[in-house]
Image 1 (spheres, rainbow, N blue to C red):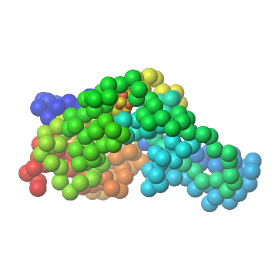
Image 2: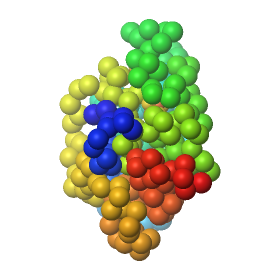
Image 3: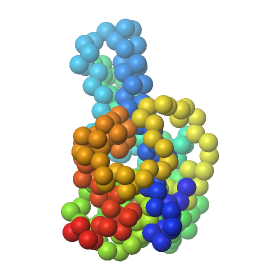
Image 4: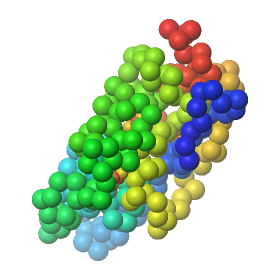
Amino acid sequence: MKAETASSANPAGYIAPFAQRNYYREAVKRLQGLARELRSDYGGKKSDFNILCNSPVPEKPLAVASGLGSIGRNSLIIIPEAGSLCIIAAMTLPFALEGDPPLTGSEVFPYCRSCDTRLPPCAAACPTRAVTGDGSIDLSRCIQWYASGKGNTVPEEIAQNWGNRLYGCTDCQDQCVHNMRPIQGLVTEEGVLPGYIDPQKLLTMTEAELKARFKGTSLGFSWLIPQGIRRNACMILGQYQRQQ
Ligand code: SF4
Ligand code: SF4
């Protein structure tokens, strides 16, 4: 779903589908179950099975090396089962396994062959021209980067294209041909959030109230609460510049 523009009469804060459930928490839960099974079958201490999710490890290169998928021109990992609509989680093991080979060999952007090389759909769809098309994103122009609490200030051009996003810009991913199929195994009830939340109401809440409201959800991360959420709410309401 495309977020509405700033001129919309509807000020409801949009939460993108990927943030309406806490898929990171679900991934950790599934890996914990797998760790229990592996320990039961092969032994090992609990600390041998270290789960890494939303962590600083280089997830994309590891995912490519593990044969999960390949990097797309949108800079994201693309996997056959779900396009770029996936998260990456990892787990250490106390024993060696034979690794899978890279899924698509050494070809660069193997999943992007069918797209226009000058202006692929992911780049054309980006409202702030952040998708370079060469496999990277200009983060200084990316709404999602700012919405994640990054950047000291939001440039005027980005602010003008913010629309009603409380959290989650997916315009580039929405236009990718690999992201238009149903995805198996996606169901989770972890951290359920609605598609829209009133940004005005969020600005009246204390830090403790915001933490309680978003606890366990994909908006509950320490780096987002409270400053990030408040800034996003201000962006929707057009109050951001006045708060500088
Ligand atoms: S998340 Fe939004 S702003 Fe960022 S690159 Fe994609 S479309 Fe552009
Ligand atoms: S829209 Fe095309 S070029 Fe962009 S990531 Fe998807 S397949 Fe690759």
